[in-house]
Image (cartoon, rainbow, N blue to C red; front, side, top):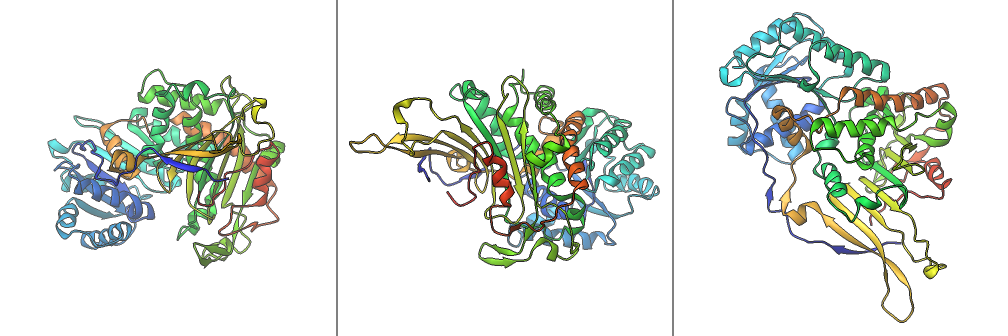
Length: 514
């Protein structure tokens, strides 16, 4: 049953949020010609430059295998940024940004790369006393990261002198618990924990950060945020998109490792964590880790009951026919890679005992929806028994396609009879505050330059996530799926996902437009 919408406010965005300016530094991007750099990092850096947030001494040095001249690299990045922004760029803004942009072709597994990198950094001005800070961004597969750390250390580029040295590590952080521990060990051999920024771009989204403000600054909600009044919680990251040109990456990773091992568990921790003693990196991250440690890893038998995997076949998305996963170039014709995962997790602590948390994520679904839905228990009163129109309260925190919070509750329908209907109060982030929200990578890059680790993952947090994912991956590896593909593109996902929640008397929120 759809609910009536009562908007909190409705205004058009007027201006971008003001951000804190970045200090001078040299930003080195390893993997500078890859998909992440083209789609996320370079557009974010360009927007920061255009907004006046980059110091005059801020320099960017891209390092990648691509055999490009500096001029060719700048042209390539201009095309990539224009594509992401949906149109050509202002010539003056781009030209001034391009002056910051440098490139060095190199093999990151070659030890000779790092002496050359040290010299190249000096050439682009990183030894300027005003630009003694260095930020290394690892936009590369996890398998290369330890080699890069060792290479930097070999030429003394990990040391902190008058300025600071930090690294930003992209997910996935390893491919399982063993590799994550090894990567953390190799990094810790050369960097202190406060120099390491393990990035999950979900944590840079304004509405994700707003979860803590919503929970802990409102006496209307915090007292009921527990097992006494909450029936179940569902966390959804559904996408209409496929895998693009990432077949090589996705075949090795799948939805479980790509989304569930980081984004989805991070949203769970923010939803379920206890109030930190202070809003600082150590306090916030400690409470998140405690949530993860309170979730008991599944046994292999439990995986068959509480975890579902799927792979999309051909279908129609947004009115157009799309191929199935196995039909994509670079994907094996008998691939068993999961493009959809749903799990039921239980947090064994005082606040959440008995409350199921359902997490689902998938490609090529009906609609792009990223949200957290907190379902309250129905009222125990006999006053409305038999009235099927009574709607249990639901609090929905939305990240996509728009950003905001909905609260659904029951109200009496006008008339003599006592009948109710569901109504919804809606808060839209951009409309209410009259602002355009920056992309997550813009704010997280500035946080890394500032040295603020609040919205980045700690080493033990990464390992706690993999401790929950590994048993699922191992159980699935032992029993390959026989029914792939098991959902059509453009649908709600595999039928087994609906049965996963139905066995507890629950149901997923529909991916249809509200």
